[in-house]
Length: 486
Ligand code: SF4
Ligand code: SF4
Image 1 (cartoon, protein in one colour):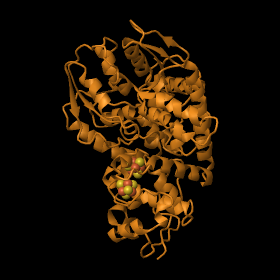
Image 2 (cartoon, rainbow, N blue to C red; image 1 turned 135 degrees about the vertical axis):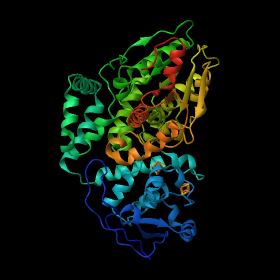
Image 3 (tube, rainbow, N blue to C red; image 1 turned 60 degrees about the horizontal axis):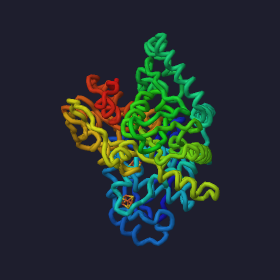
Image 4 (tube, rainbow, N blue to C red; image 1 turned 90 degrees about the horizontal axis):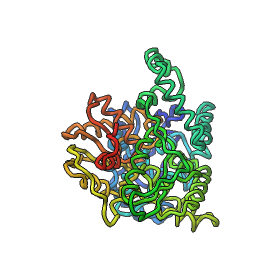
């Protein structure tokens, strides 16, 4: 029986505009076994589920292998998926989303509101990739689906304007980013933030400005960015010449982490270059499906880092690092950049991996701290880096490393997901905070700016402000006698 999906499963926002209410006309059973049932807990919204018999049908179907050949519908990814865990809907699971993507690619469904809703609700955390025994490249699939959405979705005027401003202006210019954060600092310093918060003015704006504001840390005194174009000499004998990726938001909010990264590299015999021509890594653009701009940024970065003539390109933000590692894939079809992008991606290293692979690490001093380490999704699931940050922390005498129960689960930050899907993001965050709360940690360490902000926000909301949230490299820097992380 044909599967009939008629514009939607539930009313929701994709975060950039509220999509209209949708109707789902249940077919009795699809060829792949999707059937509908009503989820009382979800307010009588029809949801998708998949029957076991359907798995067999899908496995035996030759056409099922045409677009996502590796997915065998085993469902082993479901419990690794934060949105499935929270919403309990097949269509909000990796398997369900792959089904929808396949259906859209085959022309069985259009770029309907429900398609947009379910693909947009994905965190792109790639927990499903780690869980998948077939090696389905889910990250690539979802980014392609979002590109299709980007070219086909009709968005409200303000949403189009906001996306154009954020993705095509703000993130393309370090100068504009600096001005934006300068304004934000002024907004926090002059007391306007308190006034606006007290009056609830932001709730009057479309989108989720109020949610965004709640996530924003106090940046009044965070002015320690690293200057582009600078070169820092190695301490002692020069063993390597490396380049550092400053990031956009990273350099404005967490410039002190960039500084700590450079100090730690210098301490370990690296001459550190900060290429002046570097631009945004394009991770946010790729996640949003704005691939033409992503490719343009990737080419600019490759050219800038080639000029630096370094042995390694060091990233301390796993979201950026994962994207830089994927430039080879992003530009694989570009005849001028295919080889250059692959060579560039091979040089990209997360700071923890780079330090962990050194023949010997400069000896740190003692830090008596209990530290819970949380894996950033793109470090663990995309870059497959798990041990190096732990090894780095364990190299610090006196530091006790605590393991969370589910360090591999997303904290709900996911780029700008916590802005576009604030409520769901907060539900996902709550699990992380409960996990952290169950440890006796003094400090939480994680290597991505989005996770740092999100976890700090969750701890503030839970009244656990006493716990610091820091980047692992900050602790190593502190153990070398650098600054105490704020
Ligand atoms: S684990 Fe992999 S193969 Fe199995 S359903 Fe999920 S994506 Fe498909
Ligand atoms: S990327 Fe994350 S949220 Fe998206 S389907 Fe995979 S596990 Fe679920």
